Image (cartoon, rainbow, N blue to C red; front, side, top):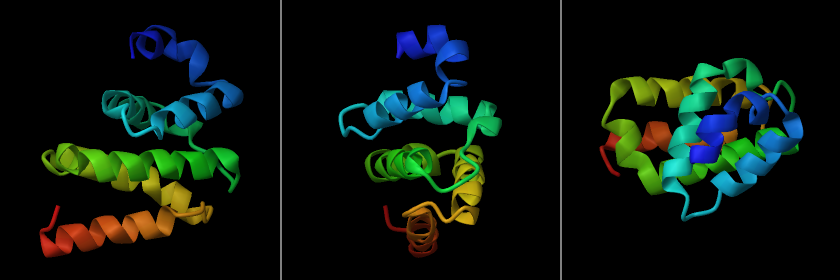
Length: 115
């Protein structure tokens, strides 16, 4: 996490390095890393993929893992929930594998009050 914090200006703009960050982020035992990655992507939305590719699908997997393992962290703050929706919208538009399903799962969870 400290490495990402310190070198985010170098890591995040590079497509290949982002792929590696997303691969790490989808691992189940890196909850705080996913939170940090989520926050950085909110601040740098121009880095979101603009077409359906490996990056977009990995990013959906990272967000799905974030939702599955840290749903209360997202729900507890309304701005975070809006940020998740903001990040998922372009992924849904490019039809990234799993983006619509994850968005539907979040909406369904919120509508039924289950976590």
